[in-house]
Image 1 (cartoon, one colour):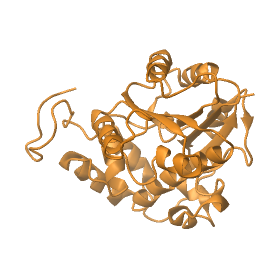
Image 2 (cartoon, one colour):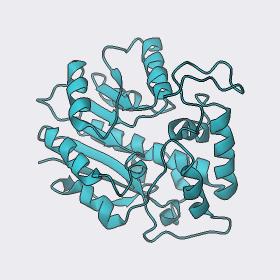
Image 3 (cartoon, rainbow, N blue to C red):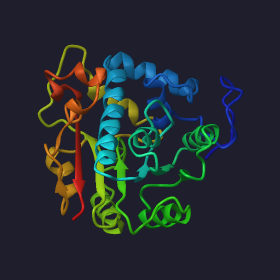
Image 4 (cartoon, helix red, strand yellow):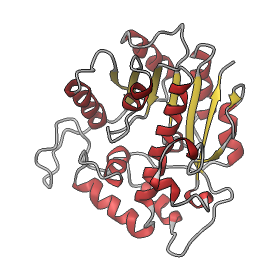
Length: 285
């Protein structure tokens, strides 16, 4: 991480890399947040020109996370491990879960220092730091994240946990052992736990005029984390050994859409394939 401050953003904190756009901060900008810098906003504007629906797509992904967490909370899951949690925005996991089960607990994990700092600040302001926890860590190291998550005292490894890897796996390339990494997390989870995840795909995706998503993928090669598409079959394989919750692997825009209001997803209800986003939830026997 560079410690150089961006002259366009003189208040940027020490330790934040502002030499390249950061995907967590760009996503925050797409969602209307403020935890981003000029380099992120400039990049986001370039993406918007190539793919005008990108801000709505970002909200579709956030809505999917919310519906998944809400479903798990209604199944009695009271503890969550959210990896790649990003910068806090409306509808955080602890807020959704606690609205259903007041005793819910969450450990947030992200590799981006801004995301971690903002998460800590949010929990401190709400008086919830301690009941929930925030860690800086790399999803590629399951043993380290699992060890430190348990050391917070927030999670009970004897009880089911909701593991969330939403909007994250497509930032790991085909040359990385991603399926083995996910399996390691699943092996660590206690029986009765759930795995909630999403992914971008080209399988069965429809196109509209002005949809230049190939250019977007090229743009992301300039960021801190280029993204990679996977087939439906490749994404489904992440759930091997789990009991898939109905309707199985589905488009994010329509997965359990009847369970919560979701204006962003409603826009694609007639053609959810256009989003190119798949989602799924599996239970560990």
